[in-house]
Image (cartoon, rainbow, N blue to C red; front, top):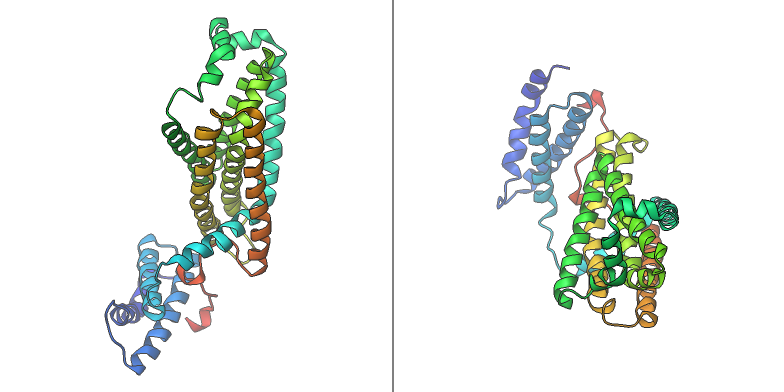
Length: 335
């Protein structure tokens, strides 16, 4: 199909749609019917261009035009408390629930890798001294690991770990489209935890290691593993797109759900940061660990209960239909 001829054939319709859908314009009854008809045709044109001759400039022009027309037809969405509440009662838990299989698999692999690394490092002192000199190992085991959680003021430490964890989760999510960056972030975190745990346990400080890691680490690692799982799900979406969807459409859908997860994890990681900043360094292990277990249990229960209910209502974690890209079945005989 000749792109220039296609543009010449439909350019008049697109210009008219642009005119009718401009903000602030008041429409007569006939103009509303014309706007709806041109909007539907432009949506079909956009789908056809994407599937048959994906010219970037034309796709961008038609995408902007369709979104502008959709806004003129549906009106501007007002962001209010109901939208925020619905995000946390439906969209976020549904997105997490949909990624449940990836999440469970990622968690199992992470635990297995850590078990292997911890066992190997703990049982081989020569490996430990290869990683760091003996004097640094002694300092870490005797005071360094424990002092890490109390070297800053509680609020400053909580903010630091929150932003650091949010950055790692963001890297895992964004890197999912290319897969390799997400796997790299995953491996680096597993390696760091496994090596540190192996050194502590190998030198008889398992109580200190688990006592300080567990309160915040249960929720923190779960959130990170969720971001990793969603990142891989995004990457898999274009490798194996859903039936009836192009690779681009499948990637866009998974990417939008990934953004929903990223926004929700900001709050989850804030809770984990507060536990690490205020609970871990200040409360005894017998009190701090149950708080961590409770936080993890509450999050998993929330995802399962609310996610299952939201999914049953038709939520997938994606944005509402009027906020998504325009798609339509292409019928060449009617275009």
